[in-house]
Amino acid sequence: MIDWCTENGNPKPAWHEQAGSVYIEFLPAAPEVGLLMVLKGEMNRQGLQAALDLKDDEHFRKKYLWPAFEAGLIEMTIPDKPRSSKQRYRFTEKGRSIASITKVGHE
Image (tube, rainbow, N blue to C red; front, side, top):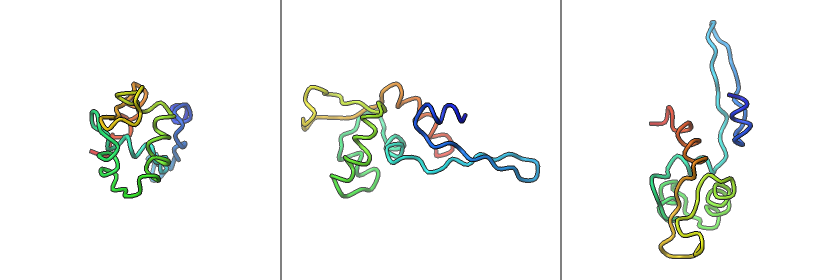
């Protein structure tokens, strides 16, 4: 599990033992992982931003959207027209894999 977290750019989990049981604590994830929690199918920037309840466009783009894009977690539906009003974002295979793991326990 530690190797998987490291390979995928996530913080290492903390391990705790209490009364003979082992507990795994996942530290807060990077903001772009939060984006993966709300992405459903193909969504536009405004929809993603609203789902995260973020008002500042520039903050959303710099801290959520572009880091997820640069990490290869999401992709544009119209990559040759990044400023298109019809632009949507969707999971890459890597993003889909990470999202399926991060959503465990959140549904």
